[in-house]
Amino acid sequence: MLEWITSTINSLGYVGIAMLMFLENLFPPIPSELIMPLAGFTASPYQPGGAKLNILGVFLSGLVGSVLGALIWYYPGKFLEERRLKALANKYGKWLTISSEDIDKAKGWFNRQGSKAVLIGRLVPGIRTLISIPAGMSNMPLPSFLFYTTLGSAAWVALLTFSGYWLGSQYELVDKYLAPVSKIVLGGLVLVFFFWVLKRQRQRTRR
Image 1 (spheres, rainbow, N blue to C red):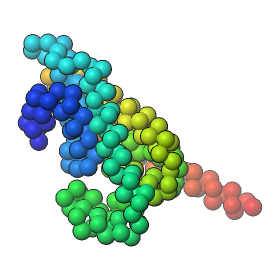
Image 2: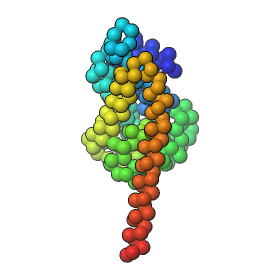
Image 3: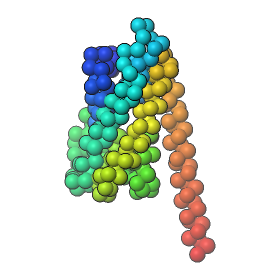
């Protein structure tokens, strides 16, 4: 996987970065945690021979690919019935490592958080790829979807890109240290939701 990502970026440059981030949304096993740090590394002056790409170009390429990939999941959610979508996920999802349970998880996240779920979801591994589906199911307006998707994707892509840029040849450390941080963020969001539910239950009891 690492060799393929490296070869694609080195041979196709900005187009390769956009393509990889587009595919990362379709095939979750392709990790953005490796793509963008490695892409950021190619723009780093710390590498032997100096920077090969421009850091702004790297960021924008990753952002464009990420947003376009998110759109691919938005439209099935908008135009396919939920039952049909889950059936397809169970039948073909093994190739994409998704299932109907994953769709339910993303839908539950969206229902709890509303439109901001698209923004937050783009920052949470395991949710970021599929959050577009419930957004489409709920007929979220496309301009709003693109706005929140772009904001969330920009934050994620920037974090990974500049991590690779500053770490230089140690870009592999990004995935090692980011994974625990992602779990902490997800755990914090779960706790926030738990206390919100608890607060609502107490309010209803008082009534």
